[in-house]
Length: 275
Image 1: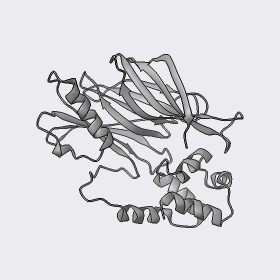
Image 2: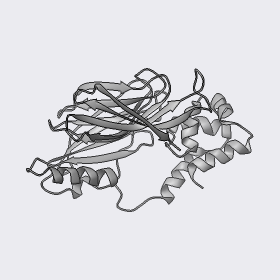
Image 3: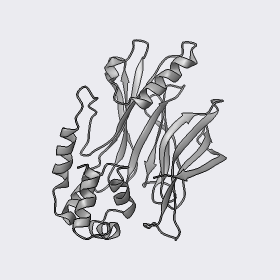
Image 4: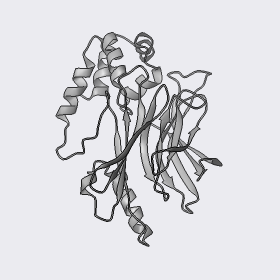
């Protein structure tokens, strides 16, 4: 049984609605919905709170589940007290071939478990991003690591606020830095907002932007525009019939463009419902 199925079955066995489980555990309704839909992995803190209400050791269950689904030769990234997702992208020095750069980006978008030490000699450094520190009351932070072609750490820094800050994708930039796309409840206008970090080659935060309104917005994918004068962000945007987040809220695919400074250019698309 998948972890999300386990939580749902335990909740139903106790005759609890998602709202009741949220009220008793202190975990937001939207978080519980996303966990049961398999959209996110619960943090260690969330697992402990849910375990108290459901009277089952979910922490132990999730650890056993991870052991059963272990795939040999997959990349082992550093964890800090919690579960996280990690993505690695490599920057290839410009060799007069944009297609080579594009191939590199596509390769690591769709195969995020490629090992840094398996890169080609032409790749002079790598970026890794992870969601970490998920075992505390303040929940998660974003950790970015820059490594040389031999896998040695050049720097490793943590970004985020006092609540949930989660990474979805990292994209190298021409100046030697990177952009990190994710979601945040530490900053922004509402519950969750799309988060974009611009980090220079030494790990300093150049600027930080959030996108969204009062309800939940999540950043999932980031790519350069065809004219290379900005970026396209794809994620989900929540719409609700009332003034507050409820079980009647729905998520839709949300796409919008920004310029190289992170400012929205007004081109937005609200797509089909996100199931």
